[in-house]
Amino acid sequence: MTGTATVLQSELLPQGMDVSFKLAPAILVLGMLGTFLLIGFVFRVADTEDMWVAGRSIGNIENGMAIGANWMSAASYLGMAALIALSGFYGLAFVVGWTTGYFILLIFMAAQMRRFGKYTAPDFVGDRFNSDSARAIAAITTFLIAFVYAIGQARGMALVGLYIFGDLGFAGFSGYQAMVIFMMTITVGYLTLSGMLGATKNMAVQYVILISAFLAGMYVVGWTQGYSTVLPQIEYGMLLSELGNEFTEPFANSSPYLWIATCFSLVVGTCGLPHVLVRFYTVENERTARWSTVTGLFFICLLYLGAPAYTAFGTRLYDLNSATGTTYGDPGMSGSTADVLVVIAAQFANLPQWFVGLVAAGGIAAAIATTAGLFITGSSAVSHDIYTNLINEDATQRQQILVGRLGIIALGVLTTLAALDPAAPIAALVSYAFSLAGAVLFPMFFLGLWWENTNREGALAGMLTGLTIWVIPMINEVVPTYTTSTGDPFVPVLAQWVPAIGSALVAVPIVFAVTIGVSAMTDEPPIETKRVVRQCHSPEPMGQQQAAEDVVTDGGETPADD
Image 1: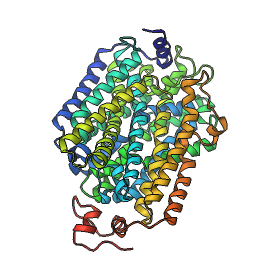
Image 2: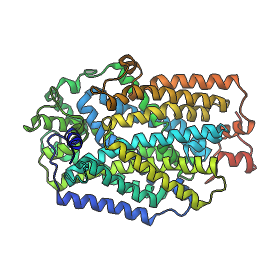
Image 3: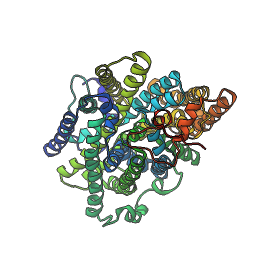
Image 4: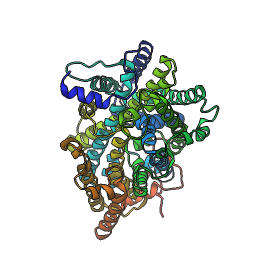
């Protein structure tokens, strides 16, 4: 092992975690990964309809489970507990932001997006604004979101993998880095086979695994340690007096402005994430899209309501463990330790290895499910939106699927390289992607569906503005982590008021103003486009597998009118 790898290993090795090979958990996780590969093979794609939208054949409950698994990534399963443990009240911004975002999706966008009826999020942008340039910007943004978001998933999978497989470093790679390569290879392998159809079938299975593992871990840890009985989601309140002020005191570690900026970015980011919105294209009509959002939100809340309780249990056990020291103070709990607190809590509670392995397997399932959704949407942006729509309009189905699979492999390689030395904890990495989705795509989706006068010029100006506002704080805060010894931002005052983790708070109002202003000063969109937008809000139900454009142009029916 090289000197650099040794330093990296020590920085990423969670404190107090038993890093050794464990037979029973290894068999459990390898069996789970083998099942994912088998499902991917059984439901391997035959055409582009299966590859990108699962043949629009997914039902309400199954899509709700897929939404839950797609959404509850390593950031939800692992990273949320980490943020609450280290930042206390600030971490609740993630619970509030992510949950509120789904209500906005349900009310304003789920059914309307399904009615518009495209294959991908960039597809919507390109067709709604009649612009290949807008489609290209949206496709690049989608690819970038998938890349940034997936780095956090790879980090989570690798940290959990250390508990199960131990330090398996090879060829100069540390144990953590070896886990990144191993887990990403498995994920890319089954995705290149299965596409969206197999990924959706896998997500339903992954949801059952992750929610069962999380709830079982929370209940058993709370019960065996005497912290809770039947309602740990409420009973953990009796433990708060045993924890530090940093856990319970509002804004002890961060300002109210940062809380609001983070929460707002997570709300609008939820509504702009392509891998979330594409789930509405996998169902047969808008009614199923709306109900699958409701069921998805229910499945998500099962985990979110328990996250503070599980974090309180883990923090208390960490404080009591003589080998680790206390959570707060100097040196305190490290970021890598907090990222696997859910697993460490089960270990510190002296639960059987196989049970701790089950909790760890849930974290891996959560990370793989979300990575699957991200890679499918990222590769579809390359294959469907850039290659087929902009480069080779006569591409055969075989060529499109081949380019899509190459896109998945490219995303896998880039994510693996970036995750070998990640710039931030899991939840922070994921939040960067949310800020990007909120700043660039959310205003286009919202205005595109709700204001028919939004036009090509306004959309282009708005997206470029959002992209610029997102890039500046990223350079200010992320680049120094690789180029300076302290890692401090280049311009501290910019990091205070336009933080990378919550830059959408500043970006979204500006992007809305720019898009509306430019649209108002230029020509209105074609009347055909306006009629399609109106049809998305028509009170009349549409047929199975039907889109608004079908009704307006070919269906022979009267389009909706305001």
